[in-house]
Image 1 (cartoon, rainbow, N blue to C red):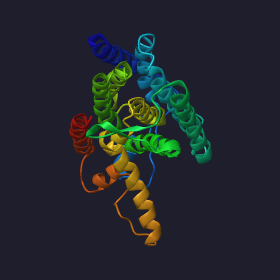
Image 2: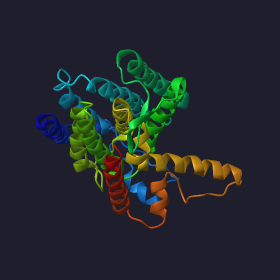
Image 3: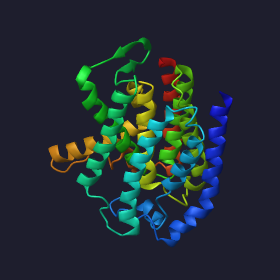
Length: 318
């Protein structure tokens, strides 16, 4: 067990750290710089030009490490495929926006349609190629499961797409998405060991890759992960949870994802219902705290500590 836990962390960390000094200058030469929205916090304007698409570091490290374990741990293959599938969508979006300078990147319908296809293929795999199915473990009641029959399918689309886009919204401060997700990855590795799901090499690979990436992404960041990284991380969390039938744990272990996406939905709805009033100073939620006077580092620390506590609580609920 130790080799399937410690080695993927170390290998991914080493690959991520080693690729940083190579890929970051390359992204700079490509002029793959982030363009900060004018309506965002003014403190973010200094981030203009910081290279994005750093998710390539994360994905490269995860793939290299995970492929070493696919033969003995075939259960990690669907996790890897969903992670890479969403990562590819994010990569295309980033490529169009920051390299080819198409401000919108992929059209919203193109992006959503691609996400639907990747999600549908993953669900089809679970139903046809495994005996895992789509029923869910109920937290704190390990002997019980929730099975909604055919309704499990639309629910799976909702959960997976919500998780992926929640991760995307979370990626708005230096080190935030990576710090929060490394806690979640550690939980998923521990849960896999405890339940015998045998996906811990992939979870540990993600944890190691993120730890390496954070060396370049903590405040002040020298590279951003972009949609390449954030969509991939959301896919990893959703796929890992479904492989362990723990999709009902996602709102707990990825509470920050949930809070970020819900804050955007509430802000838009409240704005329309009240004719222009705002529920939060700015959405997603991390920007609200910024405008309340919290520095980026404090927000990242608070959100990460909260995630760690919730992951510990989730371990008790298995």
